Length: 399
Length: 234
Image 1: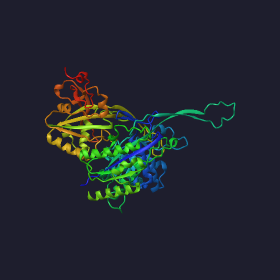
Image 2: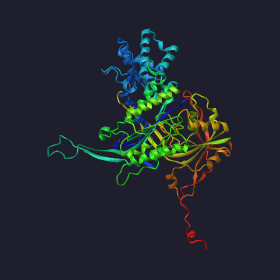
Image 3: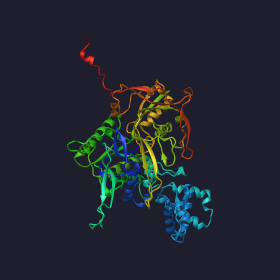
Image 4: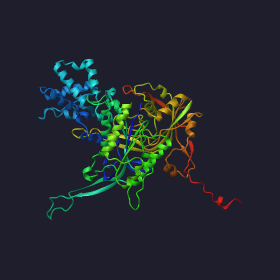
């Protein structure tokens, strides 16, 4: 059987920015190689990647991660049967989700006080974020309508119904659930193990966070006898960095998570190919939105290496354990980082005797990334994605 | 019996032994449950499968480069309203290198080596977002016990870390070894895995014994300064 593991490596430079901050507003950092680095957490970039899917995939192939899952399901129920009142639909939805996931769906305590204040009662919510695919929600909605139609109050107490609800919640996973996994604390047997592994992005060089002191002028304070001070003052913390970003996807696990896929009219390799292509596109082009309107740090990676391996993934972060030093004359970290990335890749593969003939694709921008031509000819992103997708599909056919 | 030596290095690692809910702490060194989980995953065992053979391996860790504790603040938001869900804290060990050893029957140790070369489920250092930065498999020691194997293994700290201690020609490294009856009273940690089944996840207490530190050669040590050699022998 051909084992397929996808690796994505990227170098991306961001100007002053605050992509991902901690509870004090400071950009996240980590010590690596004995020096402080800028850091963007994996959770942060995974969410950005997931949001990016909405531009690439049909809503039917995606999931929703929310605590307001009852409202979401109630909307679908009311679409199927308009005669069900909103309040009843909420209750019905809550009961259906509770049957499928074992998780209590209740009106939150902080909300229940609002009942009867003219705005109607509050909707029930789950205790934690619940991740369900569009198809699973559709299936549960159909089930709820059936329950309503049966007129049987104990409909959901039936063992066969319970099993069916669980089956609906555990089949036809969306692309995002298959890639990033799902954790339902009350029904761990319908958890989904993530096929994608995303590392925290860290800078290839030492970083010191900086602080920007600002004053804001009050536009209306124009008369001379007005107080002349600023309308407000504050500080924003930021840093700028060349980040090493790394992700690996277990393509075989992805295929198992996706199952046969969501459409009847396509080859079996199609869902995996589409999921892999969407992942590469969205992982590379997405950006966490933290303070993006303050800093306008809309950049794209300068250097990308995508590899398919047949044994295990290799993170190249150790190439930057010794931090890159900006050239005192010209500045910049990208050239040194690209060279370090390529020589580490070559050496680790030679040293451990892996990677000979594993296909690799490169996307590069600018003179500073010339070192990457030693790994492969550069391709524009759409061509790179199509080439990786075709190879993934070919290997799945073989498997 | 032989000893499988593993190298656990990466920008971030996280080895929880007691955490639940919103505060996810880490121990200062890899836990037995974490490392056995990594090996079970490499073999492709499902979480519900029996792991008693792996749990029976004797486990030890050497702290080659202790790293620093990192606290990460994590929020989640409502998909629709953008409203924040309860925040959680996650702790990591940053910039650390450990050598872990498991001692067991030759055949099992060999199977584990092969599994690490082509793992069924992808390995990570305690948490999925922590991929290893170096190959995990180091060595198999056939003619040494667990402690001896950990004492013999060369120092795997990063070059910068070795240079920072360049005034020491040999360096003492802490050992944390699974205790045996004759070790007497020891510290304990709830990281002896019984079952990884998500419906019935169980760990038992495990004694952790700290034998005398391992002494390893520092390859980055400054040459000894002896001005008399320059004068030639009298």
